[in-house]
Image (cartoon, rainbow, N blue to C red; front, side):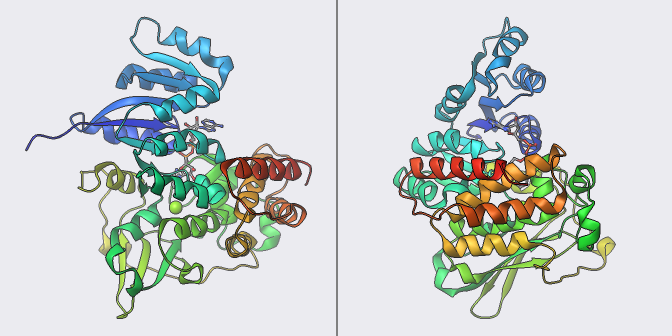
Length: 384
Ligand code: NAD
Ligand code: MG
């Protein structure tokens, strides 16, 4: 049977998820045609990717690098654009599939452009769903877009979640590695450097999500992400620490069956699942050797050392703008930590104080999301 080529846009092509996506695209040249790629500041990698994959459009977020991009792509037929308008344009270009792999709420606008033209969205950018869950999912439904999770836990759940028997699902269980500081005392955590915090034991990821894994805010964001992706009650989403990252998540049914998806910790597996959906494609991820692993272990998360989990749960329960505030404050606090302005434990302190200071108001539009995001960022900037 002939393979139908899908046009693919990669928002955030120079990041960890973006590069893994292009790695799969390069291995299956008959399956994909790259429509557009984007980066924030890494103009060299963007230009090199453009030379290799020949998209119609390459966009650099930072406008001051536009000239450099043009220069590097001189003599090619590749169109160049820059700034927030350029990023929006990338989302709007006609492609069947969009990999949303920009980090943070910055990915919201370009991803929504793709949603509004009814594209299939492979969503890595969880901050989109945390910051604007109601609005984002409403737009997906109204525009008949398709939303596929890329986050490994949500991909796992998606693969074993029977959408035709939602009422027969009792619980979903998100697994968490526990991050690089799983066994650290609070005293030890206080002195953690950015280098230590980004050194994840199982996954190689961008700096922001690596710090989120160290604070376990990543799992908190994933809790909120799960609520918007799967039709289950807030109280039916549990978190379980599983340091080996072999079971990527679980779904429990009313008959007591618990279904899991497993694999080695390589993002090319969940990315491949989203790229090929509803079919499967091959991915070069190392194969799972359970005999070699020998033992899988589990423990409950410790909210006293990882308060991000409690804050995320409370924000989800409170609803309205609380998740938007949580996400924005966390983005600022993580940036401050990575820049050496604050200590590791200050990250969650800043998030907590921002949640206390900023009033939780109802969210009725995208403008409300942007406005609350801005207020929370401004508040968090002045803390710590
Ligand atoms: P990364 O930092 O490696 O890459 C981020 C990408 O976004 C880069 O291409 C960068 O140029 C672009 N970008 C950053 N700021 C931007 C801005 N303001 N405007 C436009 N573009 C911008 O991050 P990553 O690890 O690839 O993660 C990307 C997203 O995927 C995050 O939301 C993360 O939570 C999610 N995710 C990542 C992994 C992983 O294994 N890396 C796993 C699950 C989910
Ligand atoms: Mg994850």
